[in-house]
Length: 323
Image (cartoon, rainbow, N blue to C red):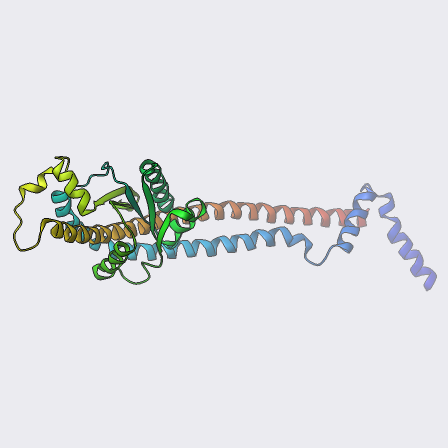
């Protein structure tokens, strides 16, 4: 019995030796299956499946962020459009003279506290640096007042000594005029200025915003420009009533103008931030969809190649046994 079984086994193993299949190919496939861990053939498809799952999750997050940004934009846009009526009378009265020469310049840079909103923060920082370079001089002083974490993170790298004041988490609570007026009062108490230059992004549409600079002059500079007959020379044509002097009235006007312009600038920049975030999240969702299509195609090709390889191995083994 033992000899018969050995003969039968010898016949069984002798068959592949005279088959047409290469011995090295069969041996390598057997060694690979013995040394490889369980499920080695499905590793490539498993990796692609995990990648597809992560891309789907990212796409869900970006779509949700786009919807949140759209809801916030609708809430802020109406208030921003209504706030434009606050600063327009001051522009008609005192004008907006960005080219006025001033010794003490304060650049108020408005940015967001959060990212994922395109390049609006980088744009504000670039314009602020350009204004700083233009207003710098041997007898001039230019300082920064920063509203927002993103502008602070960029300006603190190479302009740390010029930062006079930094305020973050401004949009943690819904913005109102009382909150911004207190903020404006704190800024005026902590800085000395001849010209305040507010840099922000003015909202035009969801896909369009315009970098803007508004200039608020100190009462002394306003009087100097009015007396010299410059761009503010029409101020003397107005009649002043009441017991207050012209200097006191100009001081009150300058403070009120700064709070109104700052309120509008913060709302405009918030609208631009949400619009840019909507556009960025929409682009991210479309990119995730395109990547998902490519990964699906790769997964199908990999799966088909794996099935084809298994079929070839089965047929080759069956042919070897039959031969």
